[in-house]
Image (cartoon, rainbow, N blue to C red; front, side, top):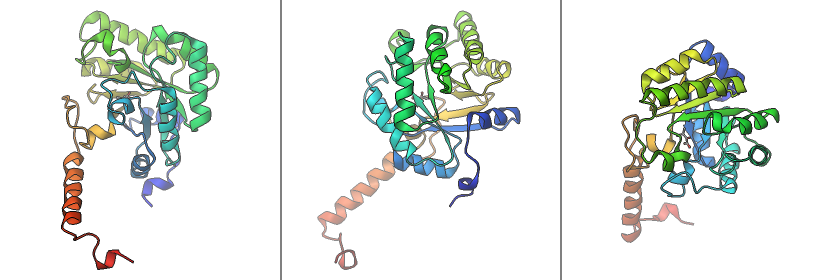
Length: 271
Ligand code: KIV
């Protein structure tokens, strides 16, 4: 058992305390039981069941196609593994943007059917009503600003957001709005480090960055990217801790070789 297994469960309150004592928050994605078990046992603070599952688990080009039922499947698999981390689940594209009642029933389905602790939504002022309605049901909400992948067709590109003054000003305004509305934290994705620092300094809730420099309250990465399972995606902000693609491929090739050579199974590996 790792030392982290005895540590108290991470809650939104714990994340706030971490910000107050300047302890960085470590967050990663997970979409299945086995990976969630490994990263929870390793001591990760927050697990995001991200709609990036659409890319890394299902092979889509964008996060748009993933459905609510698919997100619920991923989130309930993760929840069966997690003992310590706070689990956040992305509301999928199209399930909350236009209609706050639909947003609430989406969030309720996720909370009821998966046992997750909170949800995440992309956007600022445009989705204020949906956020308010979900919060009024007692469901903790994490915001997400900057490069919000569900809006990729509006942006037209995955380049850094909010480099221009007008977009930076809107992002700062949206960050304050998310905090005032009652969000417990906000993710800022692929924005200039200076802007991310300003947001983290001005907000009292934790600001978690991805491609937003280190002057924020925590970091998030997609697990399959940092483990080197995905190969094509190599933005500047991504640190690869492994090349699991090559390692797994090597193991599979060794297995194929053993089977073909009738070296597997051997005498000890049979009944
Ligand atoms: O879906 C996801 O993985 C995310 C992170 C990139 C923050 O939203």
